[in-house]
Length: 119
Image (cartoon, rainbow, N blue to C red; front, side, top):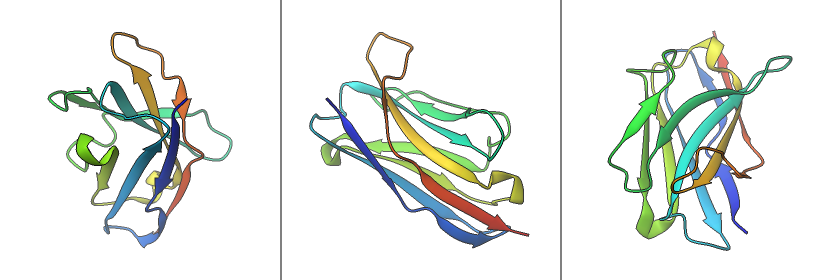
C-alpha cells in the first residue's frame, strides 16, 4: 500500500507561484509513474501533468503547458509540481496519484491540497 501526502498548497495572487510536493510512505515511489490532477468545485477531476518512473518523460494538459513543471526525486520519494504564472482558473484541489509501471490506471491517490489564486 502506498500512502501519498500532498503539501504546498495555499493562497497566492494571480501571477504568483507555488510548488506542490507529494511524498510517499509505505513503499518507494521509484517504480511508479506519477501524476497530478486537480478538481474545482462542481467540476470533474482533470489531468494536469504526469512523469514516468524514470523521470525522463513528462506530459501536460494544454492549459498548464509552459507554466507548470512536474519533476521527481526518487531518492526522496517525492514528486513536485512547480506552478508559475498562476491564474484564477487554477484554483482547485490538487491531487497526486501513482500508477504501477506498465499500467495506465492510477491506483493510489493522496488526500489533496487546496490551491487558491486570487485575481
